[in-house]
Image (cartoon, rainbow, N blue to C red; front, side):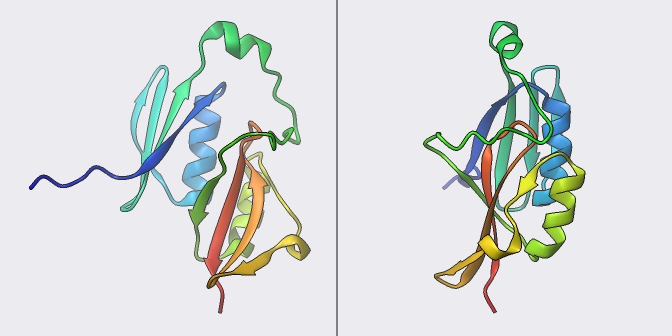
Length: 130
């Protein structure tokens, strides 16, 4: 029986190199493929594809610093990390945002904190709740 491919997600993005650097830095993913309109990142357990937006769509998107959160979407990516505290500094340095520590919460054996990447895509980081 063939091995199943990794589960993952696709993000359509305006600035692929910036997002690739962000996810490599904060989510422990490794860039495994770089093409003009496609960057693939992986870890032993997951797969993230960054796909370039068509030029007509990308022109209409204005990126800001700090990023404008896109909270009205149907999907939130979740990344398991060893330490939210470690990720907190990296997220800021790489152009994203993370909610303050007082907004972290504990559920079902993990501690979590929401944030966003440099393009405003809402993400969540989870560490073991000890």
